[in-house]
Image (cartoon, rainbow, N blue to C red; front, side):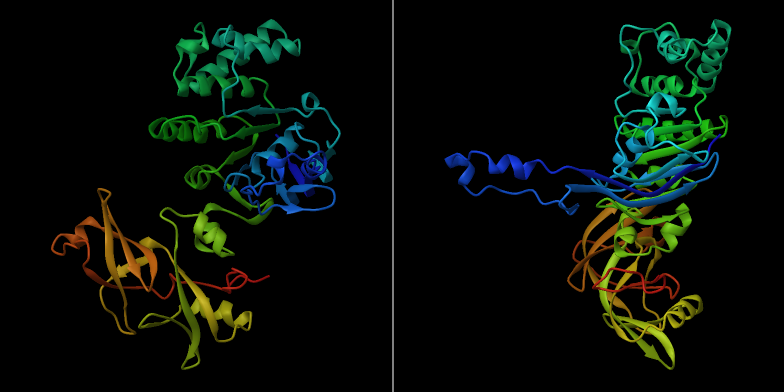
Length: 401
């Protein structure tokens, strides 16, 4: 229904804390106190919550903003909604500049984390309310409400009040209240965070079905990388108010541009080792522990293209890409500290080269090889499974700008 363009978006909150501190101090004020440290930039204007955010969202695309708490993702969503003022930059919806357009005139709808339903109204009345405010004809209201209720599977609850519904049912009503408006853009701010694990899985599936049934552009905020990977056409990974990487779920998983993305995407997170990048018979190889592994041809080409020299590096390998056993080129050794049975696989937590390391081993591979706490394990990884990062900048040496 709509294209959305964010160009050079910046949000600065005026810093009033310092001014307050300049006022009358008490003896208690003068005592040293534990300070909270934030990595957001602070300028003369104030605290920079979002800095130089650039994103082009295609019509009907499902975009997910993901990152840790305080990274600026919800602030960005609220700027799109019109609930936060944009300090600098341009926000366009269908090529219309909307920086100073009131939220009600942007043709967007928003689903909040806490449902925000009217407790004294029935489900039907909650769904009808935004349409009545716009003086939509009664017949059209009935059509939209009944259609939304059918899509979301809440037809049987239309005459109930929110207190008689479960958390998942209430969230369906909240989503229904947004889609009855048939908005150009549907914004969702961590809508599943209040649900238990089973309901979250069910609602994720419902949202995937929903996006194929309504002609709307989705912008979805979450701190849960599983939600991001399963829902998004593209993922925007944020940290400290800045965009770290934008790409499809597969791209950010297979080609992380820095150590933050590598560690944030993937569960369990990527293992990191100190190592070296060397040349062996004219080819790039990584040295870690007693192992020297020549990297795959595609990685060779990317390293050559950036003219990467021999250097100390951080080596990243995902737990599922590590294999047990010895191979030509040497192996890495670890001591098992924790063994977690996950059903189809076992997660081995090991002390390797002074660092924590997790290896995912299929249960069938352990049938005749029980790995007890304290046992020594030898392992390696495939030449195409290694990621090489600059220890100083954290950047992936294969994908430098």
